[in-house]
Image 1 (cartoon, rainbow, N blue to C red):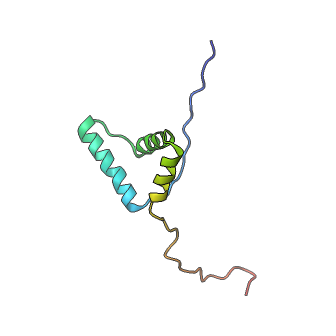
Image 2: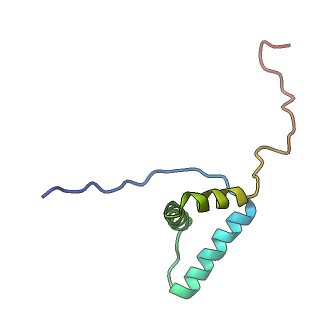
Image 3: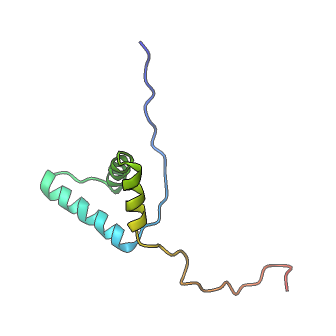
Length: 87
Protein backbone atom coordinates (compact mmCIF):
# COMPACT_ATOMS: atom_id res chain seq x y z
CA UNK A 1 0.00 0.00 0.00
CA UNK A 2 1.41 3.39 -1.06
CA UNK A 3 0.97 6.18 1.44
CA UNK A 4 -0.15 9.48 -0.11
CA UNK A 5 1.66 12.64 0.91
CA UNK A 6 -0.50 15.29 2.50
CA UNK A 7 -0.69 18.61 0.75
CA UNK A 8 1.21 21.14 2.86
CA UNK A 9 -0.03 24.64 3.59
CA UNK A 10 2.09 27.56 2.40
CA UNK A 11 1.92 31.21 3.41
CA UNK A 12 0.87 33.45 0.54
CA UNK A 13 0.40 37.19 0.55
CA UNK A 14 -2.25 38.79 -1.67
CA UNK A 15 -3.39 42.33 -2.31
CA UNK A 16 -7.13 42.98 -2.26
CA UNK A 17 -9.32 45.99 -2.77
CA UNK A 18 -11.17 47.20 0.34
CA UNK A 19 -14.44 46.14 -1.29
CA UNK A 20 -13.09 42.61 -1.82
CA UNK A 21 -11.98 42.45 1.81
CA UNK A 22 -15.45 43.59 2.86
CA UNK A 23 -17.02 40.90 0.66
CA UNK A 24 -14.90 38.21 2.34
CA UNK A 25 -15.89 39.54 5.78
CA UNK A 26 -19.56 39.49 4.75
CA UNK A 27 -19.22 35.88 3.54
CA UNK A 28 -17.60 34.90 6.84
CA UNK A 29 -20.44 36.52 8.80
CA UNK A 30 -23.12 34.91 6.63
CA UNK A 31 -21.52 31.46 6.95
CA UNK A 32 -21.21 31.92 10.69
CA UNK A 33 -24.90 32.76 11.04
CA UNK A 34 -26.23 30.18 8.55
CA UNK A 35 -23.91 27.23 9.15
CA UNK A 36 -23.01 27.82 12.76
CA UNK A 37 -19.25 27.81 12.18
CA UNK A 38 -16.79 30.46 11.11
CA UNK A 39 -14.75 29.99 7.95
CA UNK A 40 -11.37 31.65 7.91
CA UNK A 41 -10.35 34.09 5.21
CA UNK A 42 -7.96 31.40 3.97
CA UNK A 43 -10.82 28.89 3.72
CA UNK A 44 -12.86 31.29 1.61
CA UNK A 45 -9.96 32.14 -0.69
CA UNK A 46 -9.02 28.46 -1.09
CA UNK A 47 -12.64 27.59 -1.97
CA UNK A 48 -12.66 30.45 -4.48
CA UNK A 49 -9.46 29.19 -6.11
CA UNK A 50 -10.90 25.67 -6.35
CA UNK A 51 -14.14 26.97 -7.88
CA UNK A 52 -12.24 29.21 -10.32
CA UNK A 53 -10.01 26.32 -11.41
CA UNK A 54 -13.12 24.30 -12.35
CA UNK A 55 -14.24 26.96 -14.87
CA UNK A 56 -13.68 26.84 -18.61
CA UNK A 57 -10.98 29.08 -20.05
CA UNK A 58 -13.52 31.46 -21.60
CA UNK A 59 -15.27 31.87 -18.23
CA UNK A 60 -11.92 32.54 -16.53
CA UNK A 61 -11.01 35.20 -19.09
CA UNK A 62 -14.41 36.87 -18.73
CA UNK A 63 -14.15 36.96 -14.94
CA UNK A 64 -10.56 38.21 -14.91
CA UNK A 65 -11.47 40.86 -17.49
CA UNK A 66 -14.31 42.11 -15.28
CA UNK A 67 -12.10 42.73 -12.24
CA UNK A 68 -11.48 46.39 -11.41
CA UNK A 69 -7.93 47.59 -11.92
CA UNK A 70 -6.05 47.67 -8.64
CA UNK A 71 -3.43 50.41 -8.57
CA UNK A 72 -0.38 49.89 -6.42
CA UNK A 73 1.46 52.52 -4.45
CA UNK A 74 0.36 55.84 -3.07
CA UNK A 75 -1.32 57.55 -5.96
CA UNK A 76 1.69 57.92 -8.23
CA UNK A 77 3.80 60.08 -5.95
CA UNK A 78 7.41 60.10 -7.00
CA UNK A 79 10.11 59.07 -4.57
CA UNK A 80 11.94 62.30 -3.81
CA UNK A 81 14.74 60.66 -1.86
CA UNK A 82 18.10 60.56 -3.60
CA UNK A 83 20.01 57.36 -3.83
CA UNK A 84 23.48 57.32 -2.34
CA UNK A 85 26.18 58.24 -4.81
CA UNK A 86 23.77 59.85 -7.31
CA UNK A 87 23.31 63.56 -7.88
